[in-house]
Length: 103
Image 1: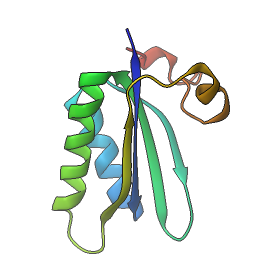
Image 2: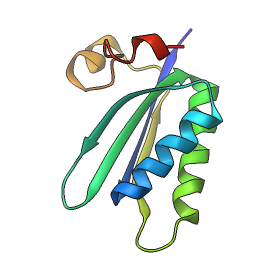
Image 3: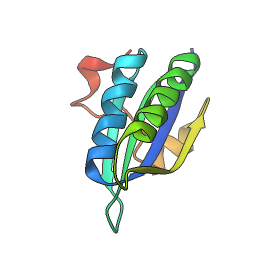
């Protein structure tokens, strides 16, 4: 089964926290990475089956749109079946700490 990657970049920590929470509750996905990008921007990555990642991403984007203030989604992407060389370079692999939650 192909394991898709979904990434959301937000402005503000509360926005990325709300997005991650909504994504993990909306689908059978695992959180694989979180990073502070720059200038108050944060990025969160999830992995799981393609359909689950799509529904989780929709929930995360919708949640950020509901937040008050300056919270916004700067960018988002879904990669349905990333090649092995992409996984070797980018931080989208299941880390040892995420392994118990892997789908």
